[in-house]
Image (tube, rainbow, N blue to C red):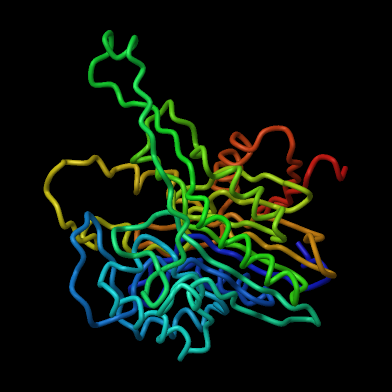
Length: 370
């Protein structure tokens, strides 16, 4: 499929890199990445040799030299606002930010204080100025940036556990429903950052680490948390032209709000820690079942490609399906994998989004534009 005219931003989901990507299909993926004018990824690891390991279930650390492979893949901006950026403490976060910057990759979402963490990363292409902001609602204790405090841009979330006092008597041990509400001051600070970026940018992008992986979600809870959709809409109302999410490790819903796309989860893209031997476990109890973190839904992901011909909403949006092999490396999805990946997205997105297949990509647009 020929690339549409304009400036194309590629956005990938979770990237956990330990070594140079390989595999028979990776060359075609590289071609797709280099066909984008800029590339934004979520970096789900630390690039550090320092810091003490956090007391948590899974910790990620990569040799700082792997940043060379990110640069070779045309990565332009890397979000570090996620639940693994503090796996090796403040030192690990600061090293990650510095190693990205030293390699010519703009880090967003984390820094030496809240001002640097929330500051937009700016990319100029084709006469358009793009500002990108990263935040996380997945916040290990102590990871939130503050005035004079290193960390990642937070949108903290209050969880309320709703116990059905009638049904629980009949089904003792059932999981409660969870209601979630974001902290007002965090949302307001993020809205202000978006509005500031809007004043001197043609395009504003927000990327977010949020939601819940299926391994941690009660099956009757729904695929989105209560806070996600209203928060995405507020960010677009504040001036964002696209909201792009990650963290659940599987593809999720696409929505258009005011003609602006919201990708609630782009799934895995390059995830070399998928193998059991690559994961570091810090706790033996509780004995969580983590099999859904590496089941068939985590083996397909997407590269969102958004094209702009001028300021504001993108003129073209599509999702390139990728398949992730046993070593965590991506390739362009074959027809069966593409059908599986798009089936997930279609099934969750509802009837307000139009999908047009041009395998291995799917063009998506709001129904009201047809």
